[in-house]
Length: 396
Figure 1: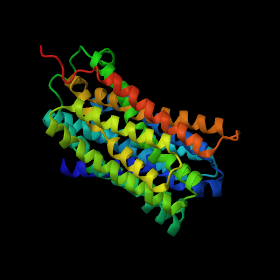
Figure 2: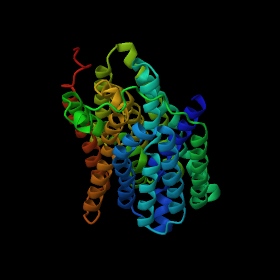
Figure 3: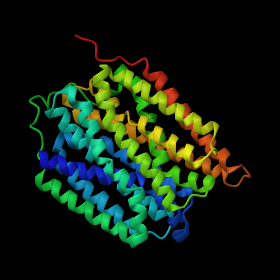
Figure 4: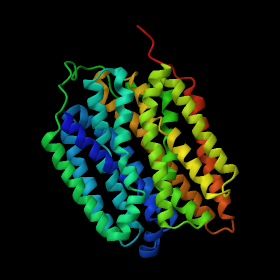
């Protein structure tokens, strides 16, 4: 199982890379194949919505076939196939198709590990294990920043994508060979529970809105908008964007490693989640008020948004308290559908905002100010609803 979890981390590395690398490629893709930031925002949103749409079939497949077959097959098809399409892209349509395939490839990897954690480890360890999985896998987020910029400079973006496709196929093969499925639950086939059971749970309904928005600002900025913003407002080049996004990626990885221990220290999932998301909203409001202050201030706020925007593992652990064990696969993937789908919806919304502003003589900083205000208000709304969620299920 240790070897299998190691290769799941490597698979999640690729998933993190594929969702976040477009920010660094913004200048080169625009120059070589004519993509705009609105095109790339739409393509990025397609990754997240495809990923989210896959969560329902992935949840069923985890419960029915187990994590080994589910993760290895989809990673090979989407991760490998998406890289091939991207490497051969000649316009924004191919980039969008590649990102959709990447979403399919990444859709089962984290949930396969969470399925194993929920089935084979004590519930009290879930937040820490989930955060560690994201923290270590976030090296892919790091790789999609300054290291990607260096790789593109040395080998070109097409050759880099061919190499990533080969890596995805190798990881998928390793998962098929070494990953072991958890033992079946004695009552896995018992009647009396389905997705409707989960969708009518009051506490899950109160948790879904924050899941929908908590990851969206950090990932929308890191995955795309950092590139256009730093280019348009501060005339930053590819290497500079790579450095800023590297610091933000490091903050996101650190946040995932710190939220679990913070929860154990305070003894409350809810308190940690509320504090973190309010802090993230404050950083977004700072950028809204001063969108063109300085690149150092902008980078500092990006780091804070990345750090505090990592409450996802604790939210997942909180939601898991309300999921019957028989519905583990479908339950955790339903939670993930909201967590990832929210990023996709945000990217589509911001893409529409960019297209609306493009023909008008609107000052560039003003558009980005509106963007950061949207991120802040969405976090505040989700946090407000989450305050009504119970800390844990009622006894009896």
